[in-house]
Image 1 (spheres, rainbow, N blue to C red):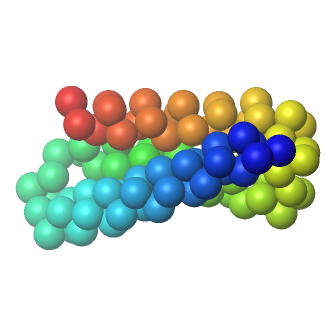
Image 2 (image 1 turned 90 degrees about the horizontal axis):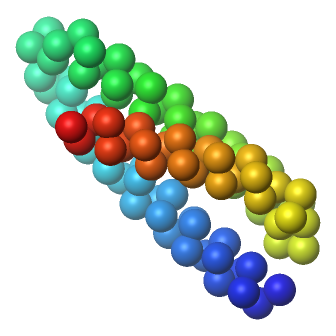
Length: 92
């Protein structure tokens, strides 16, 4: 149980960090306006969608409680992987 709570804390911290990075990326893209190419804007939109999905999955898990980790584990970890990949794709 304690191990799961530590894992949840780390995930929550990571989600907040990703949220801050996403805000910076979105602000930078909006500042660039039409100069941002179509492909980059699509990546930013994809990143926003994946962030919202990860946030939603994590919220569902937190609402259910850490004792239900095994039930939510696959969905949360999948959303996390997708979000992490989207950040890496945007970086390239």
